[in-house]
Length: 200
Image: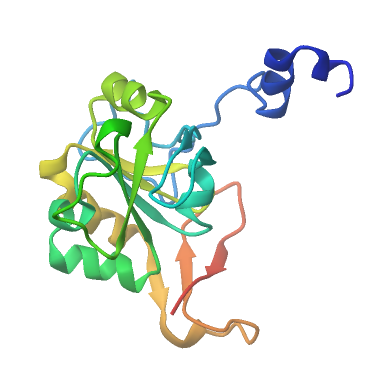
């Protein structure tokens, strides 16, 4: 890594593991609405650009999203897109809600939601991603794999399908070490079934 630090671009290339092929998941906690489109981003890892929040500058999007499920909307409030019932369901699962905007709109207020984190796309990477794929709503797993993606009008339908793909066992099931509910995420046949402890 010492030699790579001489050339910043090469260092970033290595540290961000861009030389590795993009992994793709087709089973488990991954939902397509309708037949799978070969260009669909569902099942792939979401981009990780740097963003601004209203209190922090140039932070990794991953740090804003947190360590659990997240619902990210481009230029929209996730609550309005999902509707109150679906929003409440994801909120009960401990999901983080993020509204991404162009940087020039970061400070716009008037319809702020205390349960939604607003980020400014100061690099333009998020806009480029959404422009390239057409979807404006993404549901992200804890591993930052895209569990589902859709246009705003289909968000409630996709949300319901994703909730069906997940099962929540109250009181942590049989796992004595769990402190809250256990969210069972279906895994591909080649992997053992796992459970991730999340917020109750």
